[in-house]
Image (cartoon, rainbow, N blue to C red; front, side, top):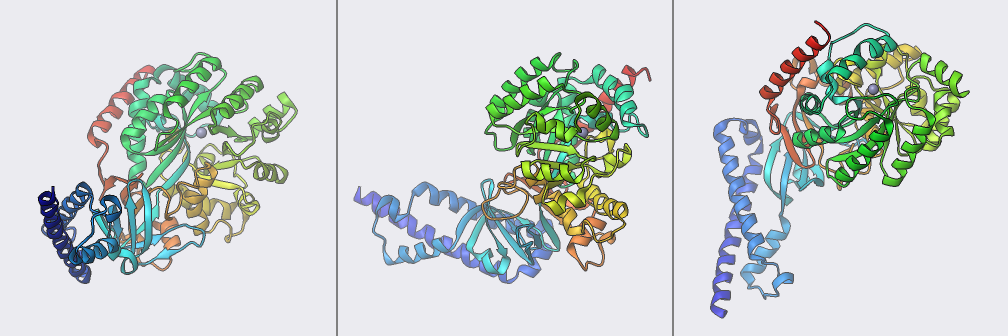
Length: 531
Ligand SMILES: [Zn+2]
């Protein structure tokens, strides 16, 4: 036993020597960081860095295996190992580091950190600061180089119908009622299946990852299948199973849909990426008794509710005629306005209704491009923001937008409200970025976990290029991001601590296979419409 312990001590001593050697190599690497940062993308120097990473990772595994801390095995250390212990305490092993670049945190103080460093362990951010300040304290298993780039919280798309990418461009330039009743509902009735939802979700996730969206809120059918595809893509989502008064692809009655939803919630609740939810389509397509049943189920299961609300003047007139109250008041009477509700659109809200939304803690998904395309109207977003209502940005489905780009929505939101109010000071570039990040997280009631880059939060972030011609010169980062940057400038996306896109290469999805499936479904959809 003594001999074994002696042998182990000897091995540990050697490992610590090696470890210190690695540490000194790191320090040398650090000193030459400028040079290495510039060359880290070339295959040769990439190999150099990779080799260091591999040695580091092997040592990290060895350390874990031999269980060397005194608290754990009570072994008295020699002087040699005490020094090593001090050295190992200085350096913490982490899974991933984002190194260099400008970090736009979107935290409470809107901190922007130059030449930053983000340490990630498993799915969470464990440290954030400047590279010179905290970089030496960590030994990452993997490194993402963000030099000359901006690091942002992953964008939050607060409203979409993801499989509708399959219906992109099928009917445009129509009023909502005609568009829905003559085109979308019939096309969906003939084509929506588990299969379409699965591939539509992968296609939507592909587009969203490439545009920097790391979390989305959905409202559609077969949400169980949508959850499977979303998990495969490695994207975070709040998925609301649709409840509607007429027969749809997955459920023939609202009662069937409630049973489906309960099973769906039981399967996914507690998943690290998926938050299951329930989604009554709208006050004009779901009668009060069904809305009450939905509220009861949401409370029983403690899940969010997603709904379209006060989207058009036609809806306001219709609901007022039917129930003697405008849509927002109608939902309040039914007890649906609460901090579990995410209301999409909310174009028609007067001052009193805005105050009601605030006091009930309702989150609002603002979809400027969809509202413009369907000429629904302009949501009173500056008033909502000044009253402290949580407002996020949404793309809506690809059939009414027609893309899933939050960079476009930020740009549009900022400009639309200036034009609408005649005041260029409303919805600043920073306000727009806030709605696409932490504001969106607040609107979907997930702001404790996502939406900003802060210690303890989920590691959901994107690395965005700043070198495109349309981004030059760079005077103000918020202006550059909102008015000039495109979805195609996003290079890398990390969700739940895992890289899902690296330098625009998808790591979880097969882009070619998805494109072939889109082609296959589009041919089928055209045939079903007699075209
Ligand atoms: Zn919608």
